[in-house]
Amino acid sequence: MSNRNYICAKCGALHRASAIYRDPRKETWEEVKASKRWPKHCGDPMTYMSYEQGEAATQLTEEERIRWITSGMHILRHGDKHKWKPALSDWQIEEAKREKAEYLNL
Image 1 (cartoon, rainbow, N blue to C red):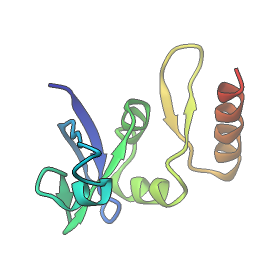
Image 2 (spheres, rainbow, N blue to C red; image 1 turned 180 degrees about the horizontal axis):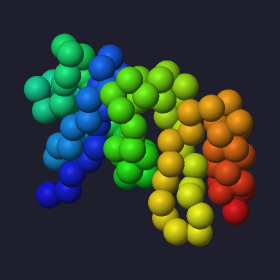
Image 3 (tube, helix red, strand yellow; image 1 turned 30 degrees about the vertical axis):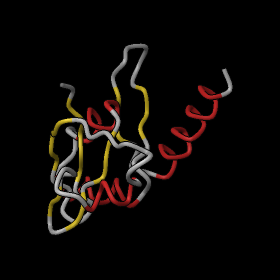
Image 4 (cartoon, rainbow, N blue to C red; image 1 turned 180 degrees about the vertical axis):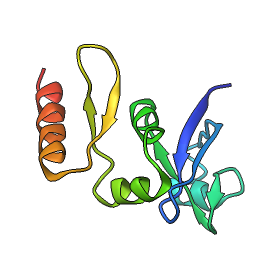
């Protein structure tokens, strides 16, 4: 069983839960998120995060996480290692978008 990282968009709370899969012949992602299987917080479904986003989110306080979520959950690679930092300022967000575009064009 593998785990996934989730974040509450309202309060910034982090949660680690089992991976949730769907059968495309039986249900849509909207139905899955509304089901009991999807983690919920503050009465709403939590937002799924990648491993890298989860690593970046743990470096922030809950207030900073809310600001990070509203800015688009961008991340920056820190150094040559696979360490990830959250992008909060405008120049960091632009750099994160540039890094992502450069990575996808490889």
